[in-house]
Amino acid sequence: MQVADGVGVSLAGLDLQSRQRLGYGYKVTDLTGWWEPTASSGALERRGQASGGVLSEANAEGRRLVAKGTLLGRTADEAADLLEDLVDHIPLQFPQPFVVTERGVPKFVPLRQEDRPVIKWVTDTLVTFDLQFHSREYLKREGAGLGYSRSDTVGLPYTSGGRRRPYQLPSAIQATVLSGAVAITSPNRHPVGAEVTFIGPGSSPIVRKAATGESLRFDGPLLPGQRLVLDLDHHTARLDGVPRDGAVEGEWFNLTAGDVLLFDAAAYDPDTRMTASWSPSWK
Image (cartoon, rainbow, N blue to C red; front, side):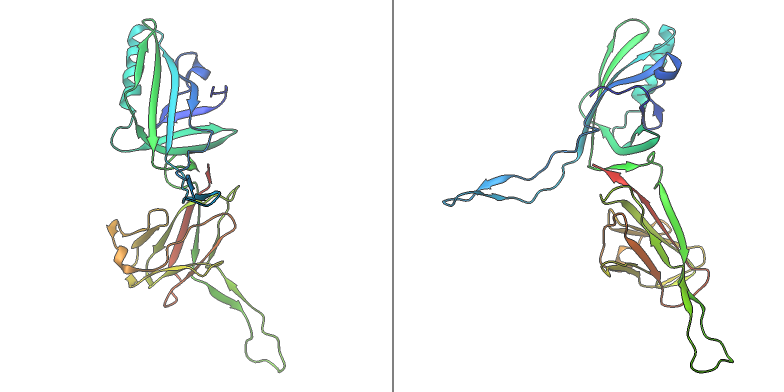
């Protein structure tokens, strides 16, 4: 599919649409595999002697993407430098963010090289390129691939107000529970990429999905400044970067728009914090 003017494209931080503004540099002219959903692994199987069929389990496959375009240098040396820079930014072993920005919203997928790039010199200053990539992810995330695009930090819940002495009976109890909750926002209902970070000091902190009651609890104390990161996408736990999967109890869960996360702990400490970070996604 042709890339419209004004659409931003970058690979591992390299701007691939600089020709739109400068008249020289890079320009992606055709992008395949970005706007359409990925393929399904599901199949329709025969039912033997019966009519109809049986639907197998269906999952989305990873994303394959082809980017075609040109680079133009003002001199032959500049074209050679541009090409060298482009080749250096093609990820081989470790995926890097491929970002497309439309209507001011950046979206990305982490990807790496697939097959051999096709590079052709048209003139001594003009080069065409045909790059193929693949990604294990099927969803596009909001942002430029540098962390999550949205976050909220809360403390443990506490009660404000209520009845104080002296008072006369009968009397109404007016108390409000403050903090301790994060609402997940997203423009659609696709699963969001998310992680939860407990920040010490704290005693056995727990995060609970309000709608279902599913929860994750760290079995142990957190010292001041320690950070336990729960990756809800990949079901991993790291305490100051060290794996601690075995110290987390409960059920891993997914999040979508409108979900609310509730924060709690075995003991109240006004300095205990939880940060929920997430990125909306698109097929």
